[in-house]
Length: 400
Image (tube, rainbow, N blue to C red; front, side, top):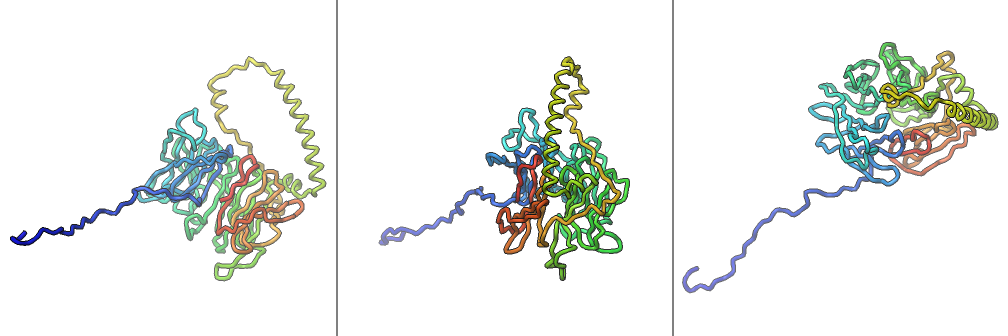
């Protein structure tokens, strides 16, 4: 300060860093995909590229993955103790599973210790994995079009359907489905002479060619087994408005019955079916009584060994019956109106069809009684898209 001057305040400005939280809570309002556990008590889903599991009853939710990479295509193992998914790591899509490690813990949503394992890592793109019904193998798509299977114990990989049977425009546009006995796959495929998707059946051992089930000349897509493998359903564009420049096409849900017995049962009238159900109920009562008598007469000093314990842990699968004689005649249109259809399932007893269809602003949940043909909106959703899954016991329908 110079002589004679008075002191004065000097304005000082200090630039501070912006103040904000490093973490923020984001509301989880949507799920991109989901799968229901075998016991129907948990749902695994994807949100913002991570895997979560939630309790159906309480809504208690646990985050399963915490990675910088994206996860997708989630599903439960048949015993419900593992979650399977694909993740984009190390420069390609690979397959992983996370398991419950403590025997006393039954659910993911309240588990304490989880362990992630590599199912398959390779330079090729591998995703859309699905456990076999016995849990010993995992099917997946390689390079988006080839259907392959890996044995979880030996890590041996076999090709079920080659890549030249399909063409992928975008991830997720290819579908396949294990049969309930694990011996077959339902697939979409293209024929060399025409660029139209058909529904096919192919053996899971990969030793035989695909069998064309639809042969319609129109687009047939998204096949799945229902009613424990007695029926298959798929979407078909053969009846509705045809697409112009790839837009505006309509679909219906079609069904094919794999046995003559299943076909005859489905075509019973409402009255005939009621009489049959009454008869079956009485037979079931009698059978239950006979079994009770047999159990009382059994020797209780049964020897229990290691083999018996091993058999107890094995998942026993009932062989699926397929009668190829006349199979093309056992086909029926299930929907009463063509529409833009997103997904469909059939009730466990084959009485009801549930499907997501759009007639107005968005997709709504519809129900058709397959015996009376009565059709109604079950729930107004107005959704942009989505999917659904029926619980294993057939009591609950989950929509995402």
